[in-house]
Amino acid sequence: MSDDNRRAVFGWAMYDWANSAFATTVMAAFFPIFFKQFWSTGADAVLSTAKLGLANSMAGIAVALCAPVLGAIADRGQVRKRFLICFAFAGAAATASLGLIGQGEWHQAAALYIVAMIGFAGGNIFYDSLITAVATEKRLDAVSALGFSLGYLGGGLLFALNVGMTLRPGFFGLESAAAAVRFSFLSVGIWWVLFSLPLILFVREPAGREQEKIGGIVAAGLRQLLQTFREIRHHRTIVTFLAAYWLYIDGVNTIIVMALDYGLSIGFASQDLILALLMTQFIGFPAALAFGRLGGLIGTKRAILVAIAIYLAMPLWGFFMQSKTEFFLMAGFIGLVQGGVQALSRSFFARIIPPDKAAEYFGFYNMVGKFAAVVGPLLIGGVALWARSAGVGGDLASRLSILSITFLFLAGGGLLLLVDEQRGRQEARYLMGGEI
Image 1 (cartoon, rainbow, N blue to C red):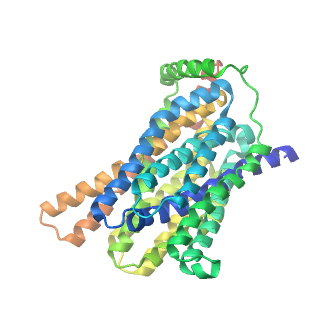
Image 2: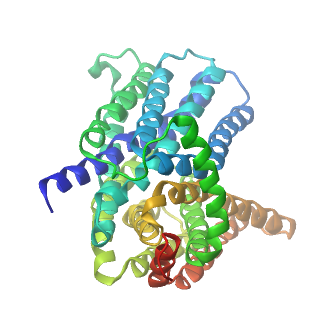
Image 3: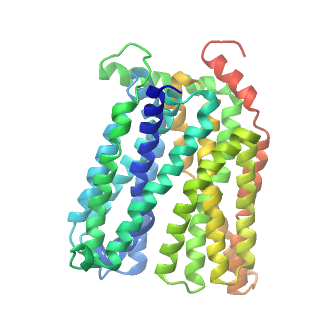
């Protein structure tokens, strides 16, 4: 690999290091707790939870609906990197501004969080699509895995520092744990911008169509999106893969939520959950790299199926789980496969799409990802209600509801078995004007 390619790969992967701090410190840990205990102080707990859920839903739906359109526009004008920078910097600014919101001001906190979420998810559309600009087909698995592994490491390091601040605020010159959390939001915004610079400096988007004025880019992008909807019937491989991805990634996301809730239900303290989350982050760093190599050894699809098989065992294990030790072991196994299944899914998808429409197709990919974690919670709730109505005891009803998630991995894995990578590449060539 040439020095320019190495720099491009490094710059691209470092964006995962940059924005994963938002996913760990803000999304997974501090914002939900701070929203309930500080910004919604004095409010009914159920109402504050509903407000938080509404904020997440609004951001997710906005990104999901706009993702294919944004991708089509960016592909048309070859402005993926500029779109990424705009979304990333908007998200970072909104995140840093959360540290300025006073106690009880949940409206402002929710509004900034929605902007930050849109910046995070919208930026990922263009970040994912730029993998085709920095990696050859043979190195897609390794480069995608490098990004996720650096994301786990970078996000974990800043999260560990932020947790330390909240546990010992005086050591860091902060007045209280609340002040430490507010400073943590500022640190995430700075981290996000600072470590986005390698991508800005080193990644060069390949030249494509002639540059147009922004009005022409938008109009042409929308026309291109309509054309893609008509063309996609020639690319059944993409449709089948996206259906499989939606099912098994829904299971992955639901398992994450289930593990935390289940830990609380058997009496774990919040410190235990934070420790488990940190452990998952640092296990995910080498594990994602290992899965990238595994994809090269046995094939990307087979490696994804290995990860799905391990995930399939998680709800089965959860059904019989009794101790805290088992919970931490399960968190470790999730850390082993979580980054791998995400990284290899991204690289597999990159192989079966037309490279000149990468942002547009990754818009569809991210749209599917944003609509994930929908079926799983419905299954859990539906099975729990059915079990209770049938007279099953509360503990057993909860365990049966957890067991229901196995359907998502079985269905997703079954559909993935039907996906033919070689056929997908042929269809991609056809969509680029070649022969199928």
